[in-house]
Structures are given as structure tokens and as C-alpha cells.
Length: 568
Image 1 (cartoon, rainbow, N blue to C red):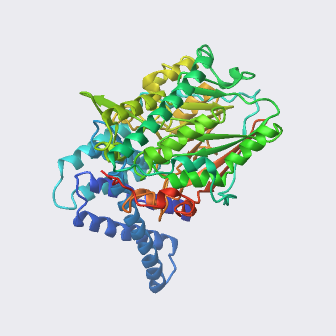
Image 2 (cartoon, helix red, strand yellow):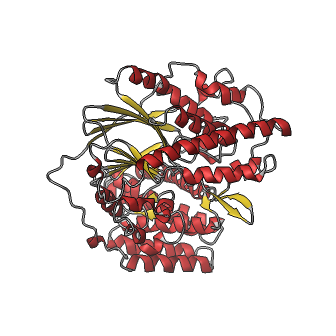
Image 3 (cartoon, one colour):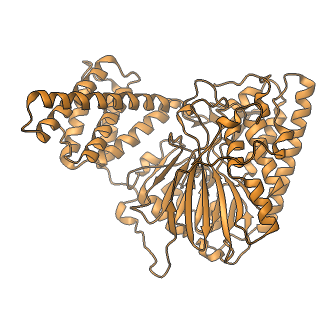
């Protein structure tokens, strides 16, 4: 029997870990059946009972039974929540050509690996014994269960390709570290009900062929102007990454874009206020609400009149399309208009959903499911999607603002980090692609075999620290993961660098989303990052999407859509 900690907080974490581990193995054969679920429920009661006897040796049986019943009920609820979370993995985005079940398999293997590492050797052995009992609970051993068990055991016993002792994070004693303070979450109320900026493009795509041709022609013109403006920035910044190895080497330079990498060194004495949005996924109400809550337009105008004011910036972390109802005509169109209106203040980064592929003359979504392209494919010519594919290829991949790295997902695989001999190496296509897909893990180091299984791959804390140290960065701000709380910090207390995940799509009753969307479980969040003389203050805040589901403030809700949104 597994030994549960006497510390209540640690015991809670252990129980949650054990329940996930057993649930993962239950799904490996494709069906978590009644017999296996019953085994998990019985095992939960056995663990709770054993801990109650240890913690309450002198309690009378009635009192102890009451405590056991209360905690069993609690952990059965946890079991149901974990069961739903594993089912939700089947709805996660995967790259073109990848199998959803293979992706889920890899995610379950990763989490099981993380959990196993969190236990001491004695409990590791007990956990494997417990898994063996679960595998035999239905009277037979499915080949997938046996294979998963063997793969995990081999993974745990094999040395990592990048040994943990090979990663040495060195802290520079001569350099004062960034002072990072995380506050909130805060609540911001928008000062305005609306803004003229939005009026011209809040319109549904028409089902009428002549009218939609005119709408698409406007979008094509917008895309070409957007790409041309990026081209101007690139020409001005070309070659400036070469030979630079840390962000500190850019001090004193003007902001620039070289290839797909933005660099914005801070100007001495200037205060910056960055409004940051994570994945928006067609949730136009979240984008509009956040811009008005942040009062971005008024702050930009105030700064233009008085340069002593904090300089406002807007950072968009990508994934503008799919999932929600307003991808092209809502979020993507607004992103381009924002950039063209203030190109020195708006940083539009690429997400993994901004990835289309061409096959035999036709354009396909590179991420499955691809609701945006599937919704319009029968209404507009294929050349339009070819232009969107060009647009996506032009989007910048990352922004270095002082020593803060903004990127959609995370770091490259260990085997490809060697390509980054200087900052110019960040423009390598494979490196950029991987930084659109990776996710942080609670493990210290993720073995190369586990990283290689899918396009969407994990990295560990020490791998993250080593990468950030190589670039001279102290904070990464990223999106990509559907974090139900909308904001999640990682690594900060124990590591030399902090990682913040921000997700700005979602809302339990957000009409931007289909009724069955798993994103309704998310509380959409934005963040304000204030950078002042090396100090970094991060304040996450709730996005008031509900206020902008109202037709008085959002013309998309003044009439029903003419073209049906497709969810799969």
C-alpha cells in the first residue's frame, strides 16, 4: 500500500497524483470500463482508510468512519474531475498528420512520468504494483496497457539524453536580477462602452455571393497592407541579430524586427506598460473587452501627447483563429487593424493555429480541428486561404522586451537548441516551429524520447532554465495551454527564470463560443506588465467578455450569423 504523507497539503497532492496515474492507465486501452473505475474507487477508499488509521489512532470508530466518508467523497469528486480532464485531451489541437489518440497517449505518458518522479523509491515501487493490479482488474491484460507499462518503466530507468548533471545554471553575481512581482488577479472596468476603432469591421460574413466577395476583397487588401508594414520593419532590422548572444548586448539600440524575431531594448528612464493577451481563438468579445478595459487607445493617445507618461504596448501571443465563432472577421481582422494603426506599439505574434499547409493545390488547416477554414471553405475561393497562409508565414514568432521573452508556446527540443549559436539562430524554421508547440512540465528534465513523440512536446524546469540563461532572459510569457484559471505562474520560486502562461479565450456563458466548447471551462485572463528600470510588475486581470456579448456594444450580436460556424 502506498504511504501517504502526514502533511495535509502534500497528502492532497499525492492523492490527486495517484488518481491521475490510475485514470491514465484506465484510458490506455481505449476504454476506461466499469470494472477499472470500480477498482479506482475501492483503492481510493483503501488509501483514505489507511491514512485515517495512521493519523487518528485513538479515535473511536464512528468518528473515524465519518472522516473517512468525508474524504472518500472528496476524492471521488477529484476522480470525476480528472476523468473529465483526460477526456478533454481528445479535443486538444494536434498538428496536421498526427493522430489524436497518439497525442493523448503521449500526454498521459508525460504526466505519468512526472507523477512517478514526485514519489520516493518505495512509493514508486508500490505505484507500479498498484498499476499492475489495475491492469488485471478486468480479468485480462490489453496489449496497449502492457506496452504502456513497459514503455513507462523503460523511460524511468533509462538515462536522459541530456543528463541533469549536464545542465548547469550559473547565476551572474555581478548582474542585478530582475525584480519580478506578480499581483492580482485584478478587476478592471472599461471606461467606455465602445470605441470608433471597431465600427467599420464588426460584420458577419454574408451568405450572398456578391457581398461576401466584396468583404473578402477588403480582407485581402488589409492582409497585403499588414504584410507590407511587417516588410518595412524587417528591412530596417535585417541582420541585427547576428553575432549577439544575450539580450543585454542589444542595450542602447532602437527596437527592431529581424526576420521573425522582435527585439525591444528599454530606453533608460522610460516606463512601459504592456497589455498582454494569450490565445483568443475567435473570441472577439474577449479581445474587444480587454482592449477597452486596458484603455489602450486612450493611453496611447496620452503618451503621444506627453512622453513622460508610461509608454503603452500591446502584445498578442497568437492563436487568433479556430474554436470560437469570430476568427477571420473578428479577432484576426482586428489584430491587423491594430498593428497598422500603431505598428511601433502592437506586437502580433504567431500561434500554432496560424499554420496552413498546401497539398495538391489546396490549402488546409495545419492544426486539427480547423474550424475557421472549414467554416468558409465553401463560400470563398481557395486563393483567399493561400493569402492567409502567406500572412501566417510572415507573422513574427517571438518578442524580446528587455529580458522578458514573449512567445506562443515555449522552448525548442534539446536536439535543436544547438542550432542557436547566436540570436540569428532563432530564425531557423524548425526552431520557430517548435517554439509554437512546446509545453512546460513539472519534471526537471524530459528525456529526448519523450520529446520526440509528437509535434506538441514537453520540456522540464532545468531545460527551461538553461535555455533562458543562454539568451540572458529572466521571464517567459506564453499562451498555448488551455489553463482553466486563465493565468498560471511556474518555476519562479525554485528556478532562475519564471514562466507565465496566459489564456484569453473562454467564458462559461460566452456567446463567442459554441455551446459544447471545452473552452467554456476557462476564465479568460489578460495581464498588464509594467517595466520600470529593471523591475517587472505583472498583474493578471479578468476579461469582461459578458459586457461585450451585448449587441449595444458588439455589432456581431446585433444580427445572427449568415454562415454557420463548424466545430469539427
